[in-house]
Image (cartoon, rainbow, N blue to C red):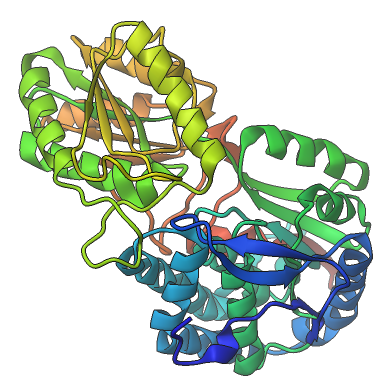
Amino acid sequence: MNLKRQDLLRTSAFIAGEWIKTPKTFKVTNPSTGEVVAEVSDCGEDETRKAVERASEALSGWSSRTAKERSDILRRWYELIMDYQDDLGLILTLEQGKPLEEAKGEIAYGASFIEWFSEEARRIYGDTIPGHQSDKRIITLRQPIGVCAAITPWNFPNAMIARKAGPALAAGCTMVVKPAESTPLSALAMAYLAEEAGVPPGVLSILPASEPAKVGRVLTSHPLVRKLSFTGSTAVGKELMRQSAETVKKLSLELGGNAPFIVFEDADIDQAVEGAIASKYRNSGQTCVCANRIFVQSKIAGEFTEKLIEATNSLKVGDGLQQGVEIGPLINQEAVDSINELMRDAESKGGTIYQSPEGKGLSGNFYVPTVIKNATTEMKLHGEEIFGPVSPVYQFETEEEVIELANDTPYGLACYFYGSDHAQIWRVAEGLEYGIVGVNTGLISTPVAPFGGVKESGFGREGSRYGIEEYTELKYICWDIGE
């Protein structure tokens, strides 16, 4: 691996400031080639309990530091991540597969959360409230919730940790992270730079594990863990809720999505196609906020679809390390098989399949960018998260109809629509049952705004001032000052 700093490729677990080799290891493979990138320490219940206990021991020292002291350390962490953006991007591409330039973009995006929350550390405010009696004074404080746990996904192995660890550490909490088994190397590299930045032992631990359920059960049941943040499927999120109930943990859950992408007849069609490409095909369609169902008003459906097919056909598919590649592999063969099943179902129910000539003939985990004309609500892909580079296009007639279609899902994470009628924009934005609404844009993620969903897409927010509040408890003080 051609890194400027070879020491960023870590294969040991990071527990309470120590790099620990476990008796068992597991392999991390490159989804583009199937080659083994590294063998990584495999943590289990004992390592998890140790990490939680050390996090509890480190809590008082970390939370008692001034906001400026925590801010300065996080700022240094951000600077180190950006200093080694190229190396971190390369590690990410090798274990996750996304194109190298896109991987570098993720490193910058993840770092932006560390930067943002390094600043928010100084802005965790309480209130004074007019008392209910003349001799009473009422004050509120926000204090760190305590030891936190994070379980993060493989599709954004750097950014999802930054979005959780950044606010947790800024608020004065300590954190134990269980990264996805497919992508632990990015997490371990981040921890190495956090250590270099001055994050004290025990404040941040990283537990790679090939059997995530074992680690997860300790994190959800351990009484010292007061908060759990999870990004992943709705099914796993529900199980984590059940497991966390016994100790009544605070939860932040960013779960599955089924994002509608609506194009009204008065939209700028070229702009809408550009937004659809940006939303749908980023990370080969493997994001929870990807456009999943594209609804186009019938008057412009033909023109929009032809332009979408043309734009899709231009996307270059291949190994993420190759120059100019825009679509990398899916994470594994299971993901490819899942897409193939959805495609067979769509075709059997009248869908017309258009696949890009780019990438045809590639074997393994690659999937050719695809557009499906004549999509219907009877197809499986209407109700399931596709998680691949496939764009089903539906037609609709009226605003009321498309809002009903868009909301016809248990999920409510992100949605998008394009149009120019300002009155309609307000009506549709208010009528869509989603936590995030993109209007005339296909890119909505930023550290300055609250990211999260409603319904079965979960609850809690990441980013913005709301993101740091997720890691605090609100304390009310009633003070009798006497007559």
